[in-house]
Length: 596
Image (cartoon, rainbow, N blue to C red; front, side, top):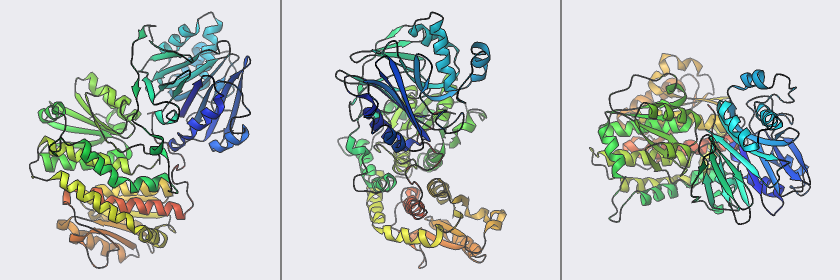
């Protein structure tokens, strides 16, 4: 992991690669490197830490000449984050960059490379050593690549250059995302369209166990059996302005405040000419035919899935459950006779979720993907796709994509069967307006974060029912960007053990939006206050009390997760800001988790 960019064309490659890698910084990384071909040799430059260190080392790329190159930002999986382990990895003739994990690297070392003295601790070096070995034994490079595909187990996206063949660049993919950017007189390779969008909006997909041979003017894609693939390119629906911070200091703040726009966009995309909310009939037919919905996701998307379960059961009358993908794939529960699977993933490339998709497709079950990325792996491999229309989300901590997931789940639930008669178009429009009003209270959130949360090392979110589901997401948001250890708890569970952690000054955030349980949660607030906790109360107007610091305008009770999460996102943002954290790129985290 985590970001790949390659370029072949008439221009100097290094500045283009550095610019592309900068568009992938949001994914998280700990080192970066370039390999640039020039005059018979490949020049390697690496740096630990921020991409700015590599840029400074190379004069913004101007000091590394050549019009063929590959670049990489690495998030350490094998070996410490240092220059030796940083990509690219090279042999006498080849340089490669790699996203993913080679699962059988130990076997490959023993079987093929027993006499090799490895320089790094990485699994990636195994791949480049194998490529050197196979070609030195007489295999043509395309045959050597097919040989690699045949023997390597795991996930990999590879970009390769060969000093003996500088008119070519090579791309290989299995499970990890990789695209080819098509230009006029140049071509590119990238793990994300955003790395190439400044130069082209036209891309070729590479499917699993395929490889591509790329020149300035051509792209040829082959299967692992050397069969040429006839595939048309597609245009990405991205704009450079979508990935700019504009006047905002951080992407996270920008994306929090884009949520009303996202909701309005979703309403517009999921309605017909008569203004009625719509979902493709083939999706509805599969959902209606199932006897249970299994929602599969990770992290923030899993939290959206829990709320989705709530929607399906209360709006559609459909049994549903939400599962953590990494648990489901190895500990699959007993399935019903006619299951339907919904996969939720911002990127559409989440490896844990894809592992489940592969498994259930082998079992013959239907699948729907909810994703923000058209043409992503989960989207291609599921039976149906519902897009989130959130626009590019750059900050690692998801905000607007989470809101979009919850909104699209609500649309699907209503479209399947609206047994409670909810006017969802009206309600989502009301929620967009309500979030806009919440965005005007920045100073309040900053003051509360400064007074209650930022000085502490621990924090707790408590709530009941759907508020508890939001607490899980709110807690994740706070801990991932501010490093304050935070947990979300069902408020009624406090007295069953968790209250032992409450001490003088412990911050507790209570979410109260459900009228039928608001008095119960307020009783729990009294319990923690009596033990010294400092409590922030987030409530809707109909369930509010005069002591509540944050009061949200009333919306439909089922849909309160769309509004109650917003103050929590702000509290996370301002706590991280006050603690001096790297808000958009929290330590140790990546935006798209493309390895299991």
